[in-house]
Structure formats: structure tokens, C-alpha cells
Image (cartoon, rainbow, N blue to C red; front, side):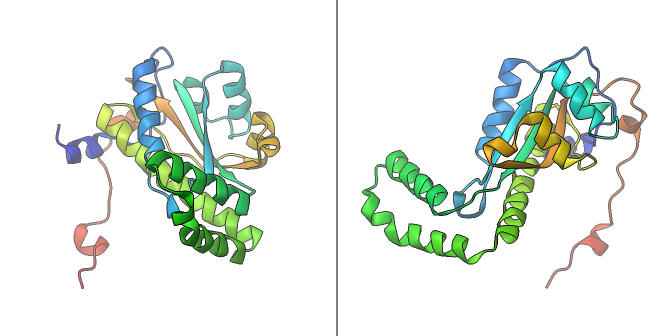
Length: 209
């Protein structure tokens, strides 16, 4: 299939085949794609949890209005925003750049100052919103990579973030749940898999200036 065909093939899977699991290679490829996601200033101010434990998935389902995707999917991917974005976080990022690219750290001081100043100008509430937005960029990459690989996924917001944080121990890690995406393989009897994709016509969606 062409790339556009693959995007037409994908849909927000409502029912997964619980007997089908991603291979370790498939999962690692998806996680490679997420790791390579773009983010503002390259900070990646979030963590990504990969939930496979059936008992944990059952608890998450209870905190997600009982939606079956949580327990029938092969894995549940949880994007969680950092709640402590500060100068120390930026410093660690700059350290990583210097090591990875073999650059004298002194040459990165202006870049570090610029990012730190931008972070410090934000209120804590604004930082959280900003970090949540970065999670959605990574989510988009996950969904696109999954479609390219013939793997199903369902982006979801219908859950109690506070309960997820509690179940996954995120508060202790300085994180809070943003959005989730169960991944796996569609069930043959999921009627939504056969439904025609509904999108706004191009002449309504796009504005050429």
C-alpha cells in the first residue's frame, strides 16, 4: 500500500483481538519512532509508559470508563508530561547535546540560556499545558508509524488522569498522564474497521493563501 492508503486503512480501533500480540521487534520499532518524535527545543518534556501487565491494564480500564481497548490491546502506551520542567532539566538536556554531538559545552551556553529563560518565564500551569502539547506530537508519530507497520491503535482521552497517575505511580516520578493509545491488532468483528472514513472535504479543510 502507498502511505496514503495506509492512512486510509488506519482507524481508532474500538475492538482489539486479545489473542494477537506485538512482537518484541514490532514494539521496539514503534518505540524507536516515538523516540525520534520532534518536540519544542528538542526537550521531550514527557515520558512514555508501555503497559503490558494484565492486572495493571485491568485497573486502567476501570479508570477509563470500562473501555475494552485497555484490556484487549496488546499494549497500552501512556504519554505522561513532566511536571517539573526547570533549569536543571534544561541543563541535563544541554549536557546530552554536548556528549552526543561531541561539542564543547561552553559553545552551547547561549542556547541553554535562551531555553532556560523561556522556561522560567512560564507559569507552572503554562508549562504543564506546553508539555501536554508535546505529548500529542509524539502521539501523532506513534499513530503514523503504527499505520505504516500495519499495527492498529486507538488514541484516547476518555479516562481519569488522576486515577492513571495513582495506578502508575506517576506523581512520584514528577509526571502526569496526558493521553493514551492502546496498540495491537483489530478484531475481525470490529464493525468500525469496515466503516468508510469521514473527513472534511479538502476545499473546506484547506485554505490556500
